[in-house]
Length: 145
Image (cartoon, rainbow, N blue to C red):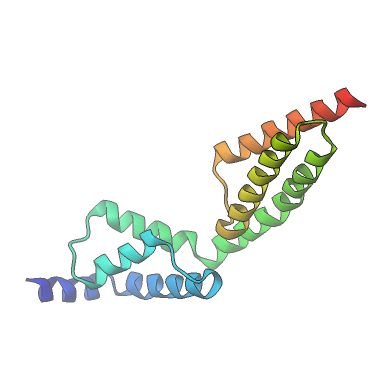
């Protein structure tokens, strides 16, 4: 049974298996490890696990997200957003906030910037949190001058 499914997946998902292997090797080359979900999907394919329509969609999305065109778009996004996030991080020191609050805000921005660089994307909520922080910083600086 299992050998039959391994062969079935090889025939049915040969292209996806090759693409996932490429994506994982790129991730390992850049970050030292691959993301767990991508690895799990590859393991499911090569071990002959039955692939559900939902799994197939997830695999196709991984491949699409890692396509050169998509990577280029995400690189462009990162180039436009990174300077703004660095500016927000640098402006924290100009506030009259307590050292602890400043430190927490700087750590938050470092974490957001690190994720943006690593994943080349942020969630809508993360972007909103950065915007809210920027508004707070601006108000504080304007109030104290």
